[in-house]
Image 1 (cartoon, rainbow, N blue to C red):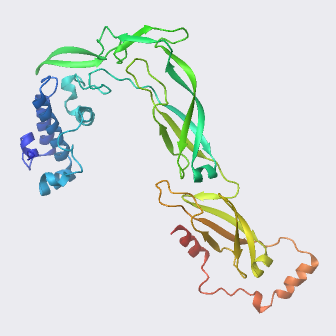
Image 2 (cartoon, helix red, strand yellow):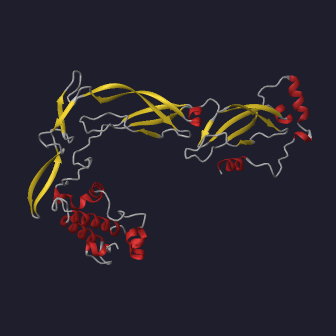
Image 3 (cartoon, rainbow, N blue to C red):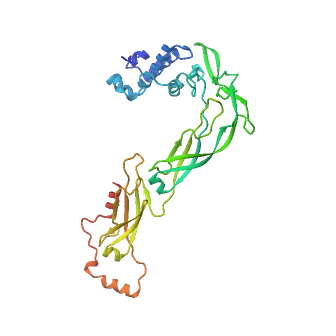
Length: 374
């Protein structure tokens, strides 16, 4: 059974925020890894104190805990039973007690592997990829050339003599709490734990060279302009035999289509027809991403009519089907008329059949817009 958070910090439910903070700082210093090197029990108490503080210092979480106890955070919230990573605890609450320990502690430096040696990660690369609407709808695999730093062939590294491979320099300081151990990044190896042993010709001071690389990028259907995709391990490499490469960050740039306009997962197409075509009805070919398709317009169709072609839009990035293609019908009014045409329309001015007679079922422009966005 989990121990009560108030008991862990030795406070009561009526304790103020400042009292909770003070109690946590006291426990954190008491069980700090620098004061208890290799003590697993102290490390566990250190984590539990952080877990208790994370809940009780938040008014909303504290209220839930006071009402439901630990059940309020089963599977959600909190540190998950005191198993939070040490790096996360120090990054979240390090300002509370960091000054007492010089802002660091030995054995848990960010980027260290289980054996204690730091794994340096190379820097990320960023590129922009232009995609057509067809590529976005169908998904595509792009091959791009990038210049990236890699370790030169034949380069070798050896253990840093200053930090002996740990990547950190440990110092002992006398404080009011006794002798405290702090750690800082080794300036000789920049924290990698290794230095250059053999530098091949053409390599820089870290044993690195620039190299052209062709990277294959799989872009899923449905991406949007400005979205960033990550290709792991295709960024710059870092020096050292224990290093890992950075990532390639790919920014998507959507190119504008000649006829189709995108709006989320839906596509829009403006179809212009003549008075005659609107009055008599006609079949028309329209542009879609998959090619041209033929649609039939009924006689007497009105300008502003919106025809919806289901599933002819952009696929959902989450795999929930595709959007629609919305065809906007526009009846084109001729700007110039010859004498015969003008006489015809003058005769039709008072014809009953040519007078506007909107029916209740005919939606207004604003109703059509509302339907389009709903």
